[in-house]
Image (cartoon, rainbow, N blue to C red):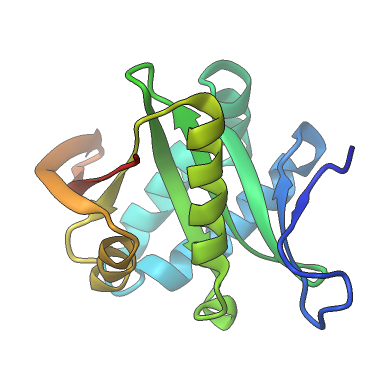
Length: 179
């Protein structure tokens, strides 16, 4: 059995694959997170908050803990031979899939990677008999919000969470019900 999901034919110039992150690749994932977070959040958050959140949620240690003891699964979005982005998911114990993270490098946006990731997640929900996908998104991240709305998510609530060191996450909680 292959260890990835190919979404385009092998003959395609830029194949897109969804590849599970395994323990030896966690450092690569953390490095990708650092790169993509600075691209995604530079206009929304201070550099200090980005660095704090990377250390707390996306460091090699944090990712290892999430995967080993918190039920998270991470996947690279690979375009050709390059890691173009990643996402992280886990079941929430209430019959839903929590999309913790979905980030794509700027150079690869608009190429169908987020659609492929959502198709994969919806397939996982069907396979696991889950009823919905939910996520949190910075309420000022208009680009991401538009992607989620386009994919059928709706805003369920607003949440401000203190994450320490004087920083907060000011988010929408969005959900997509699956039939």
